[in-house]
Image 1 (spheres, rainbow, N blue to C red):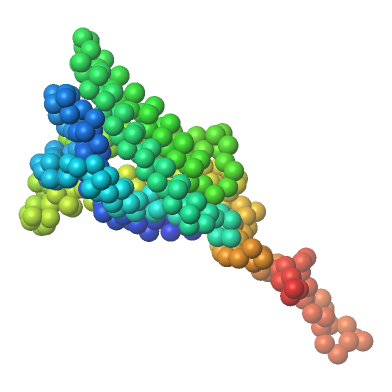
Image 2: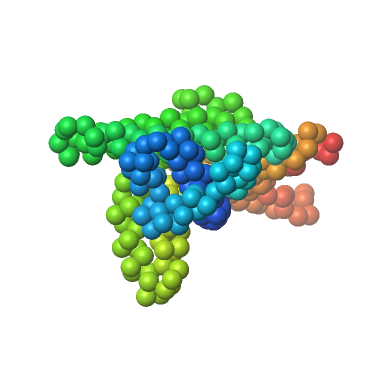
Amino acid sequence: MVRKYLDDGGGREAALITYYGFLSIFPLLLLGVTVVSKVLAERPDLLHRLVTEIVPASLQDTVEGAAAAMPTSPIPLIVGLVGLLLSGTGVVFSAYRTLNHVAAVPFRLRAGIVSWYLRVLLVLVLMLAGAVTVAGLTVVVTALPLGSEWLQAGAVLGSLLVVFGGLLLAARVLLDRPAPVRSLWPAAAPAAAAVTLVLNVGAAVLPGLVRRAGAVYGSFATVAGIFTLLYLLSLALVFSAEIAAVRQARLWPRALDPHRPTEADARALDLLAREQERTPVDRIESWLDVPDPPTVAPERSDRAGSPEPRTGSGAGTPPPPAR
């Protein structure tokens, strides 16, 4: 899995998800708070509790102020909500590219721009619905007359199940190749655990990160803390996707010595090459030019003017003929 992560440039993919996630987080939070505010206009107490659960404490004043400034008339409000929805698509677009890159889906098989946008918007709506569901579940659980330990355990378990189902459905929608549930759940399970951990621990860890980063970043300490949590979460998501990719394509064992590749190495390199097929008629083949170990040259014959050439047992496979 680590070799596949390095082959795919997993660190770069996680950084892109972090970057676009940071740019998308405010529009998505504003969109969610605005919709919830309109739905729960007559329940200010429940609205306040939901907003507290959805929005990080460091951003609550900013998001609530921006939501209050949204237009109230129907048409401008709808236009504003659509604009926020489109502004938040960056993180899903990045996740779409990363997921199909990790799965080595050839470019010629990927969705067109219309299907692309429809899938991204669908997953974005699922993300917002999942966030509101997790927040609502937390509010409901904390209202039950049980012990605090049971309340916390119930909220965490419910969040884990909601996130697991959301990630599983999002992967089915975004992946541009047939993917049964049995091939996706090994990625969705650890990813859901990582997301749940960040949701529950991040609220307690973020203030400490901001305080420690304040001496270096000053007023940007909050940005640095959010970037840190987003990058850790993105790394966990990419690693989880690599688990499913390695398991599905049976990309193990990988060789430690690059001069002695295994069959899994050949399959991994072939997948990387085939991913670059861009047009419907484009086909890319790969082979490993691995020389055989040299054999001892036969002794010079009296009838030959020079020794026979050294031969192996089938050195590197020659390239296929040009088509």
